[in-house]
Structure formats: structure tokens, C-alpha cells
Image 1 (cartoon, rainbow, N blue to C red):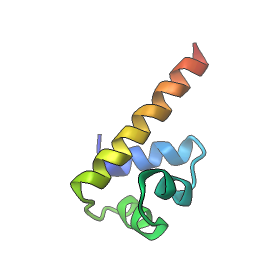
Image 2: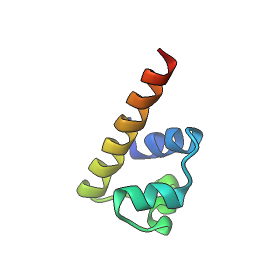
Image 3: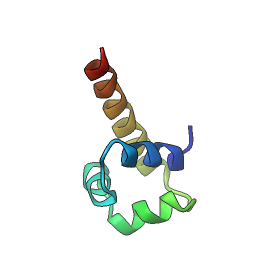
Image 4: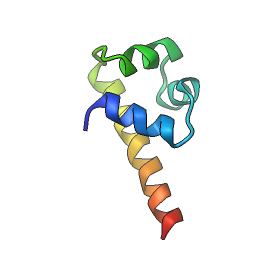
Length: 64
């Protein structure tokens, strides 16, 4: 899954770009650029991936 796909799913889960940015330690404009296909650094990509996994896991628990 790409960073863009993860960000799209986080948005669908109700997270704003500003909220994602705060949780992963970057700025909202950086998240906006990433949603448009801009490259992100390794550490930021891993932080987005970790947040996505955490949110996805919580959603699965809620649905069960």
C-alpha cells in the first residue's frame, strides 16, 4: 500500500491532514503534498504506516 493510499484511508476514517501531521510529527502542508503524490522521507513514511496500522487495528476491533 502506498503512502497516498494510507493517507486516503486515514482521511476516510475521519482524520484531517492537520491531525495526521500532528500525530506523525510533520506539518499539514507536507501531508497535503504527500496526498498529491510527493515523495516522503523514510521516517515520515514509516510514521504514516504506523498510524495507519494503529487506526486500522482499532477499526477492526470496533467492528468485531
